Amino acid sequence: MTIRVGILGGSGYGGGELLRLLLFHPHVEIAWVTAHEHAGRSVADVHPNLRRLTELPLLPMATPESIGRLAEEADCVFLALPHGRSMELVPYIPDGVKVIDLAGDFRLKDREAFETYYGKPHRAPEHLNQFVYGLTELHRAEIARASRVANPGCFATAVLLGLAPLVAARRLVGAVIADAKTGSSGAGAKPLETTHHPRRANSFFAYKPFAHQHLPEITETLARLSDESWSERLLLQVHSAPVVRGIFASLYLTLAEPMTAEEIGDLFRRFYAEDFFIRLLGPNVSPDITWVKHTNFCDIGWAVQGTRAVVFTAIDNLVKGAAGQAVQNMNVMFGWEETTGLTWPGSHP
Ligand SMILES: NC(=O)c1ccc[n+]([C@@H]2O[C@H](COP(=O)([O-])OP(=O)(O)OC[C@H]3O[C@@H](n4cnc5c(N)ncnc54)[C@H](OP(=O)(O)O)[C@@H]3O)[C@@H](O)[C@H]2O)c1
Image (cartoon, rainbow, N blue to C red; front, side, top):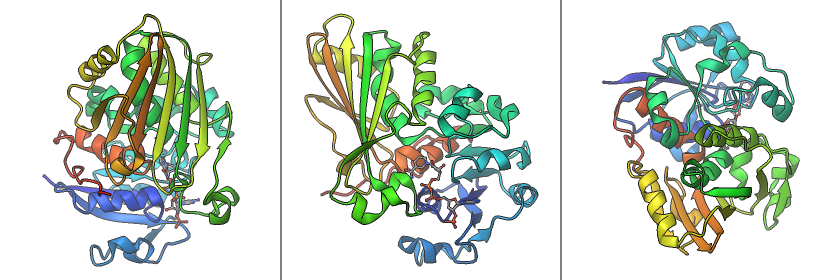
């Protein structure tokens, strides 16, 4: 079976990664790709890594109505647009077309939390309940039944995959500190003052304390897992690291009862028994963003001393943190093997 796929925002970094993966997906034909400022250029011109691999043009984004008509030509539409654009367009996409949104517009069930953390009113609140939060490893069954999926944020993916087994088993007490670092591609292709090379290269800084927009999707998901509120317990601090790709999270935890490293390993192995993309490295082993680069894997390590524990996770923000997980969700939504088109290895070294 082959489906036709449309990509809104194909000139960006997330859209470029979707193209890199979907051009080689055995069940996908890319029907169309849009851009904004880069409209009129070709995909291969904007993403030089795709030269000779595609002749696709970048179509202009016109009105929401015209996006709706374009969507009718597709079985599945990916939105890889800046936060705030998806909610203007989703209402125009016909019901029969599956939607996977990489932005934050439909991740939260709590509209007020959206408005607080994204700083704008929600333009399509009546659509919030149609979306399933697409952290594949946690919500696979719901995603399989869904026609609309909100792909998680990159920090949220790294933090939730490290916390989920211990939170679901109710092994944690007190505060959890999620200390996460990202590479510069997390900020998208458009240069900003804080992402400009002279500012970003060889530097290291923290940003958005208590205010990062991924915080509410993490606490909402942890609350679903454990039936308790996490808004006062989770402290997320994000940092800019002087690399291009990758997220590394260190999760500092207090256990309700002392556990050995082997017990933590057993808990993680049971929780992720069916999950190809989770690689458990073992106790006292740190993941490395290099080994997950360009892949859909999340590598996890851990260490413990009595009731004090730390879990480490690493992902590629553009793959498991964005386009790769979106393709993983598409596979689940269309009933294909979850790993289809996603088993490319990274490179070594
Ligand atoms: N980067 C990551 O690591 C990452 C991870 C997870 C989720 N996400 C989310 O995925 C989405 C895309 O991120 P990105 O990093 O790919 O961003 P990006 O590189 O800045 O790309 C944004 C895309 O949207 C288009 N665009 C910009 N303004 C537009 C407008 N007003 N109307 C229509 N199209 C517009 C751009 O077109 P032109 O370039 O042609 O103007 C480009 O194709 C964001 O919501 C982001 O938060 C990103």
